[in-house]
Length: 163
Length: 172
Image (cartoon, rainbow over all chains, first blue to last red; front, side, top):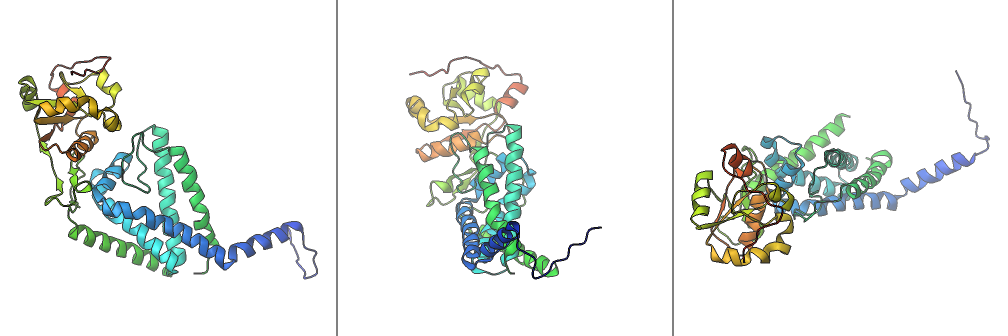
């Protein structure tokens, strides 16, 4: 067993200073707000086209070939509303961390769905921001990178946000 | 933890309620408890003023397809990609892949103008290309569109002849 005693007079190492600086930046209110605004805003923007064109969205979900046919309509109806409500709550500051957890879980599901279809080599439309079907489908690697990057603001809110 | 579960329940049930309510009052509600129908065509995307924006386009069976095409009463469109068309299609079908609709539409426009009735097919019961093509054609103003839901799969299962060609047939 190893015991570490910390005293007030212990000299600060560079690592400790860096750690302190990073957590200061993450706790900085404008940073927190920016994260909430980016993540929430993106999901609100993404949900609108899906709400307006539910059938086109159902078709996109169907083309992912991951859900049973009986669950497609109900997901197409509910999912965009989960996105818009969580997005609005996140920006408004209601249930911040819960909303961030929901949106990050959605991103996580999207990442799995996209990778799954990337492995299967299916040509599919992401349906992320628009329900318009494009000529060649979406670029799955670009989508994956974007979704993984989007996990960052979510993570900051979940780990450092004050609920 | 309890608080977190409560909040998740609040957000999810609020979404479900709003989603169901919105669906109920929208112009073309989705049939929630039905299975997904790959051939349903949602014309509301292009034509918001239509009285019945979401319609199931007329279905048609293999026999009718054959008789209509043989008697030159209808034009048969293959909505699949050119490679699939080349490897085997219903005789007399014309290729109009949905993925290249804008690029290739003008090549079949004259043919479409000659025929009143359009029949569209794709792979089979689970493909969506034919209904998307139907929607695009509806946008261009065509009214008399039929979808052969069984597609090439059912056509072949029934033992009907299949034509294959390396070049795409376009009659002018």
